Image (tube, rainbow, N blue to C red; front, top):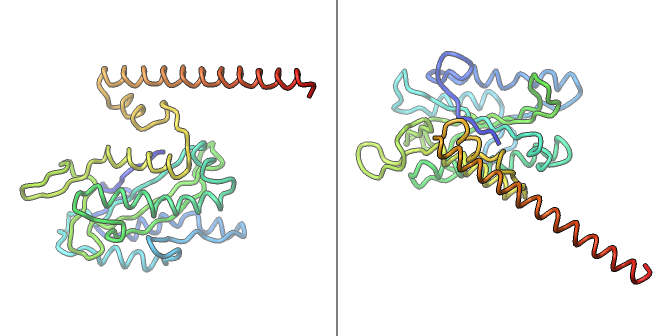
Length: 256
């Protein structure tokens, strides 16, 4: 599960001004879907399955009390399942889309809110999400979701930044924090539980993060875990084969 938090700079996810650019960009699949006789995928939030682009823009752009001109006004969380993960979410794009909405509402947003350590829940987060079905590339099924999240909570009182570098502080001028690594772990763990997904070590966040950012010792530790996991899986397969052979042999002895 690839989860990214984006926002900043001067490109698509520039976030110090209006969210109009991002909202417009996220509608790029709509016209093609309509041409193909399909329904355009709407924006949704925690409680509503349909929110118009105009309302999304208004809500995000008017939820910025006490933010300065150069402050971030929103962030974008991108949730991109692998092909194997998509298969676990359903047999059809419709089933996968329903599973994605449930995952966002019941796992991603609650984990996001909790990770600020401010006693927040999903209903405190001002967000609007949209599902996309394709990207330019080799994969035919590349469903993913983008979530526009306001910098302020729904009450327009608390400043919430998932890109802050302090973690879990309880004292001082800035209370709370946001541990991105912990957030990514929670997103993966929740997905595996909800979708009953048996994740291999080499596709886990812990493994991939260690390979990309870890120390030599951390990389070695993950490599050992991967070897052990593979050995255990092969041993389990062999035991299963032996049991099957015994059952078949026993049935033969019974004249079946």
